[in-house]
View 1 (tube, rainbow, N blue to C red):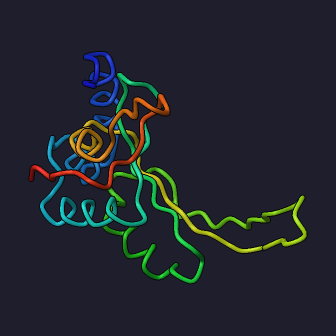
View 2 (tube, one colour; view 1 turned 180 degrees about the vertical axis):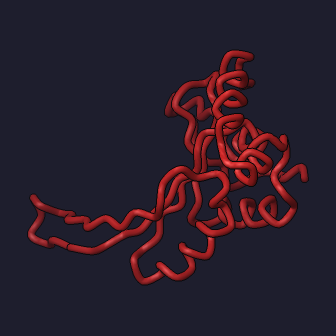
Length: 144
């Protein structure tokens, strides 16, 4: 579950075109300590990691209900050097075919795909042989 040299090269080349402060954050191979602990907490709760292909980088996705928007903005500000987009607010309608329908708003942000998150992906996500897919693993020993 490693990233390829080409994936890493593309990541570095994109980073070199950024503003100085974002470039400094993104080219450091480890997250700052305060983000390390924040990310662990997020992955134990509302956060998730996404990987489009097995040889690609990983991105953080945080989704919360609209009532938690102040907290989501706080998290967004912490991870902002690793984002290219703003917080998004989405209106959701669920249960169209059921007699119970629910309309609500949700908010989210996603980071860019980056190699610094691969370490966390390998800790929290495991291949499930029964379902044949990769699932977030809640019962594990964290090697920090």
